[in-house]
Image 1 (cartoon, helix red, strand yellow):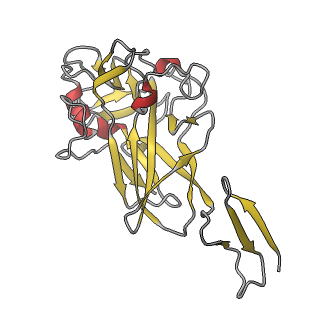
Image 2 (cartoon, rainbow, N blue to C red; image 1 turned 45 degrees about the vertical axis):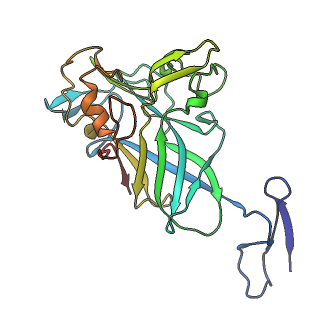
Image 3 (cartoon, one colour; image 1 turned 180 degrees about the vertical axis):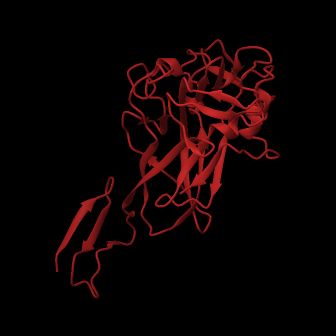
Amino acid sequence: MKVWGREIGAGVIVVACLSGCGGGGSSDTVIPGFSTPDKAVTIRFNAVVGNEIAACNTDYELVGTAGSTIQFKDFRLFVTRIRLVTSGGEEVPVTLDTTDWQAQDVALLDYEDATGLCTGTQEINGSVTGTVPDNGQTFNAIRFTVGVPESINHTEQNSVSPFNVTNLNWGWTNGYKFMRIDIPDWNMHLGATGCAANAQSVVECTNSNRPEIELFGFDPDLNAVQLDYAALVQESNVSANINGAAGCMSGVDDTDCVEIFTQLGLNLASGENDNVLSQTVFSVAP
């Protein structure tokens, strides 16, 4: 019998058998009272426009209420608080790896590659990696938040990737653009609004504007999360601006934001998730 041990965090030891352990098998055996090992997970996030993959330097037709033909100038977003849900309804947080795309429980998804009208960077990222406790459970749902947590949204982290992407920062007071999807003359910037610093330099915002997404029928080994720009602007005319800044910049008085926020399940007036609304932008894909 061959036996070895390995540390899983401080003071945690797992013993496993390669052979000769009463029937064999290679599964780890956990000593009672000790933590379970971790399992690596990769969660794919696909960006699409209807049935087409979203990319720079590509024309997309029949978009929005005016049936516009568009190209992307930018397509990025932050996600945080990713949780997988077991078939028994238990919510299991995903501990994100620290990489150039991920830090402090935040991941940047980037679909622009500096081609065509896009002027960002060549590097793209459409997945999130991390770990969950390996209890042998199966998952059938995913929950996550679009945005950057309030606790770090107003913190200057110019040397920490992925927070050092300057054109996703609205400045110290307003924090980060949680989602930025731009086309010519019509931008969609989602972020906290009504932000102001008090005498102690603590920033508070009246409108959080962080969509909470829940998708059922999701298995990280089989499925991807799909983000559909066509669904986001399905009730918007992206060839005309109604008022305010071009497109939707998250302002409570910006009429162009009414339908955008509705598709994200957000109440534009309060910036909170509205249980009456059903988000249509994110779905489960093979």
